[in-house]
Length: 221
Image (tube, rainbow, N blue to C red):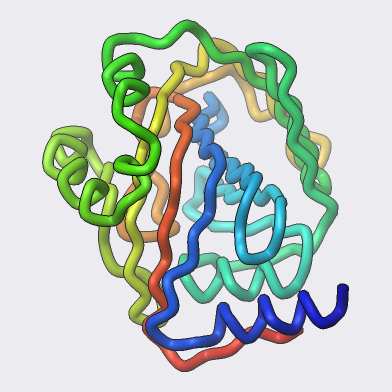
C-alpha cells in the first residue's frame, strides 16, 4: 500500500503528466451567501475520495480535504484562504445525497434530467472524457455566466471538464460550524476557486476532469 501511495505521489509531481478524475461535482448556493462545491471522485490518482470547497458571503474560501496530500494537490490547482484536513464522506441513495466534512453537513436532492442533461447523457462516455471534446463543450458553456470547461489553473496547470450528465438540485439543507446556512439559492456571485464557476442554478454534474501538471511543485507524501 505504501509503495502505491509513493507511486501516486510521484505521478502527481511529474510536469506535463495528465491526471484523470472521474466522478461528480455539485454546486449549491444558500440564502446565507455561502456557496458549496462538492467533488465526489470514484476514480482518481489518489483513489476514491470526496472534497468540499466553500466560499462564504465575505469572500473567504475554504477547502475541506480528507488527507494532506489531496489538500496540497487541490490547493496547488485552485485558490483558497484556508485548508482544513478533515474526514469527508459523501453518499447517495436514489436522488438524495448526504455529505459530512468536518463541521459541515449537507443534504441535497436532485430532480429529473432536463433537456441539457438528456443531451449530455447521449454523448458516448469515451468521447466526453477526451480533453478535445471538453474544448468543444467550452463554446456553449461560455453562454452561462462564469462557467468554463477548459482553462489554466494554479501552478500553470491546464484543466478540462468533460461533462457526461446533469441533474438539477431541487432542495438542500446545510450547516457549517453549528450555523444553519439557510435555504437553497442560486450560486451567486459565482465561486472564485479557479478559472470557472459551477452553474448559477444549483446542479449535480457527472464529469471527467483532466488536469495537466504545469508547475514544478511536488506533493508531500
